[in-house]
Amino acid sequence: RQRFDFGGRDVASWFPGHMAKGLRQMRASLRRADCLIECTIVLLSSAHIPLSGRNPMLREVLGIRPHVLVLNKRDLADPQRKPVSARAGLAGCGSAGHRCQLCLCLCKQQLRSFSHVSLQIVPLVAKLVDNSPRYHRAESTEYSILVIGVPNVGKSSLINSLRRLHLKKGKATAVGGEPGVTKAVLTRIQVCEKPLMYLVDTPGVLPPKLEDVETGVKLALCGAIRDHLVGEDIMADYLLYTLNKQQQFGYVQRYGLAEACDAIEPVLRRVALTRGRTQKVKVLTGTGNVNVTTLDYSAAAYEFLRDFRAGCLGRVTLD
Image (cartoon, rainbow, N blue to C red; front, side, top):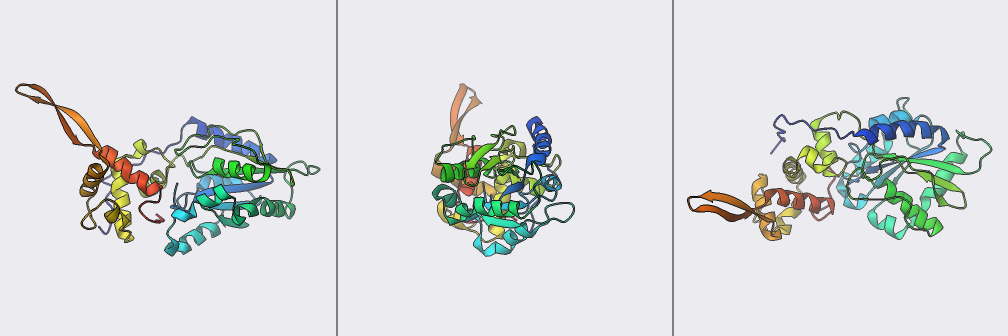
């Protein structure tokens, strides 16, 4: 397929009450923040969408404070599409044309093992703040950092990782594999003693209205919008279209297909067969109701999406 037909579908923007409340609280918290760390996905669950995974509303909130852009889960991103990730780091961050002073790329292993890249975050943020005007109490020597981003890009995981690294402490904020786990701006969380640094976790916020349907589907594929609001069927079909367009044919071997498919039905049929995704349905016959076992295409679509999000279909960048 040369283009994807959305069939006149519209993507429901996921902007529940806690997002609107969270955005108001973030604006209020900004007065006490020295620096901002914006998380986005390079592939997924945050590197898949380095451009689509950024909320323009948050850029308007940034103002002139030091701004660090963290591209998360780069191990899932296509290494051949580095210019896309580079443009994400260079994109303007505010209405006045302010840009990120620092762009870091992290992967899941680095968050777990505390590699040298993770070790850079605290000293680099401290250096940025020291070289910039302080926006709250001038006499305070502590650092207050606001962590922002769309849902499910690893904000809470980043905070917990830095806390384990520098303080040897356990989780301070809940994490999850779906959007909406953080529903309120939390109290400040200490992540380092020297220098004394606090990070503030915030709920993931999407714009009330997405720019276009395709951006919405990309966000949903990366878990920033709940699957059922878009539909697993359309998401799986768009994913297949993207994989074929980028000549990422890892799914052929994974599911034992004879060749690449342009239609989603044969792929989901094979996924359902190999994963045992079936369902029993009642069929009315002349002698009464009969239970018939059929393939569960909805469950197969979910398996297809889950494999993508886990990196089992190859390293893919949607932008």
